[in-house]
Image (cartoon, rainbow, N blue to C red; front, side, top):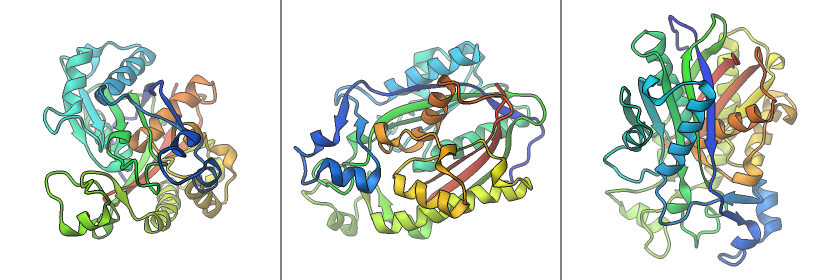
Length: 332
């Protein structure tokens, strides 16, 4: 349990998805697959992809500006920027620093954090501590993922899954009893090689996993990840609820990382809840990694679904292997 001295909550949300749509029918022309096969196995109908000559950080800039507008703050009011990504445009400078400069957040400390698809939960937890302990007043947390640039478009097991998007939130102090109520983070590096994206070093084992000598693409052991994901999502959700002595039926929403509808369905079955508490976006955006939770939250908020006093859990799993959850009482 992550304890804090001040109540910290989300006071603004924003998101951005590229205009270009890649449908399952489009993928039929690239690899040996079909719309029916993809939809049945993943729940994905289409995904958004960024143009090849457009940097991923541009999505983060748009999402950040929209979150600031929603929070009623200026960029100069931000003290901290944490950006979660597993597809950075540069190793240096960080995407957080690039976005800091682009939006004019001249007073902010900025850095990237990579916990793969769990990165948004990790980043929120880190930012919460800075605000709760009085180090900073406002933080901008961004999940920015351009996964279309790191998938192998000849590998039908992975290219059908991923899309591009960015989601952002602004954190600040809120009324006592609101905001982030509890957080939980986990890692298991012993099984980390079940999802890999090589960078400066490519082992012989990694080379054997990939076809056509595309060594810097994403590879995943789908069966092992599926088993891990269902268990991680259900146990992480119950961890924060048990810490708060809260019954799962008290929740108004669960915002999970959306990698596959079968994973979500398996987790909610274990939890004993119905899918009306999930705001699904995977059908139209695919797996957008650490951007999935903030994009879903922003969309739900804009549709008028989120109301003050709503109780929710944010939960994710990802490469590393990593997982995490967060219980939130909605403030705005």
